[in-house]
Image 1 (tube, rainbow, N blue to C red):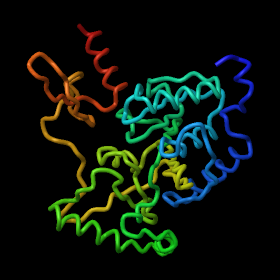
Image 2 (image 1 turned 45 degrees about the horizontal axis):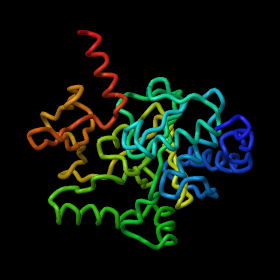
Image 3 (image 1 turned 135 degrees about the vertical axis):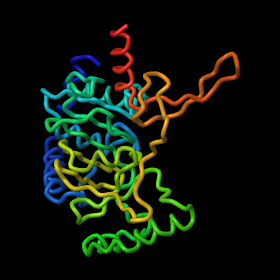
Image 4 (image 1 turned 120 degrees about the horizontal axis):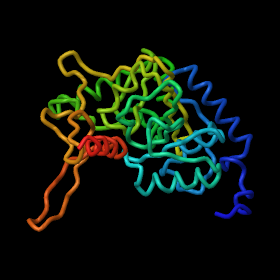
Length: 288
């Protein structure tokens, strides 16, 4: 985009009133960990459902000195990540990165990076469905009353029925967690693998649901406990013996994809966090 066109936009696209309103909602969300805070979700040049909530948060807190990183499913090069990164760059002029350690703001959908995050970093999650009670109570007014009374009995019944039907807690993503022992929170479509990373983390986690016009947060050093039973404890997707086919990592979240070859092809498991996997491969090659 030319310099002349850049001047047509406010810094970070949103007008200053919109940013202030979102930042006020963020402050309330941080003060009440796990509580759903309504905000006036703005229209953006991307479709709702493609990360508008997270993008509005990023656009409201970013400064010219920040270095953002954008990932989708752990991948820096997916279509969604590339398009959001391009929009951020063109409307702010800041430099972006794929290095998790170098980033000050990490906007993501579906994954938390494998590397430990620091206190000076902020992770912004794009959220498709904000309220975990949606599974058991479709009426928003009733769900709001249930949150205010900490009445989560229906969710416990839902978990119990999952065990009865499937023999285990068959919740692959959006695993319900109790934040600060008060509010039930949707952990977004991150896999169960990433849920323990929310507990007592050094990093500030911000969640934005643009379509549902809700913001919530998990501040640093907050207790985040997944719902579980004594005889059916929470478990991640870890499988003994798992190993990344590219970097050899044995303790990362893996995704499977088909690799075609002369023999008809095969399924291969590799790290979901592509930047982490690439760094491990570069370190291994440097030692040769």
